Length: 175
Image (tube, rainbow, N blue to C red; front, side, top):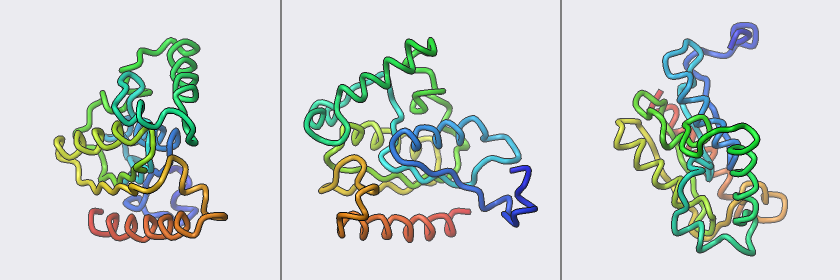
């Protein structure tokens, strides 16, 4: 933020974006900077991790044999909670339990075959209920990490381009 003028970045054109754990970081940054001069004006959250406390039906439906498994989630949960002595419902790691009012507009993407599907969908609902402008989109035939498969999957590449274009339209409309 401090170098935005030098880099010719407009104050009202700062967004946070991330997938999976990066989506978690993006949501936490957005929440913690709501009243700051450098607060992001938009969020692009692609299958974000937003709730380390709860386990929803998609967690049990897709927790084996796909890209992100229950072992992966449990490892990360254990690391956050034990290594850093953080409660699982602390908004610093589980933004779904944080103050969602005044959050920047959010563009949330989920994959249909993903342990994180339900928590991201619930988070989207909570954002909307708290008056946050948002767009939710599900890619039902995809799994966690599909945006990283663009070199080998034409469909993933097409979806990633589609997400980029649609996010730009969403941001332009809501900024």
